[in-house]
View 1 (tube, rainbow, N blue to C red):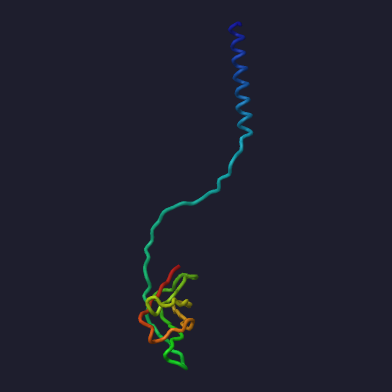
View 2 (view 1 turned 135 degrees about the vertical axis):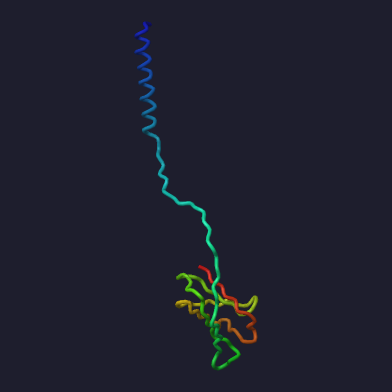
Length: 125
């Protein structure tokens, strides 16, 4: 082979290799990855100040507590869970909140004055 024909043959081989690699690349599958977020942060957990506690007795049987009302020093975030307990290991009562004025119905099971030994309030967002 002459030197010139070797160059032509080499260029043809390179052109064929590039065409094969390019065609293979064109037929590869692609994946779509959605945008995501990740992060790390810290925030302070602070409690509420409970005040103006009132135990509302049943009018027919004053040994029973029908509701407990109290105020919080700030309004919890909408959708927060507020629970109250009147005795250690006692029932947890669900509460409603309207502008930091909280009412807890204590009739199921019925709370009694004699069994009430503590007031524990839990508020969670």
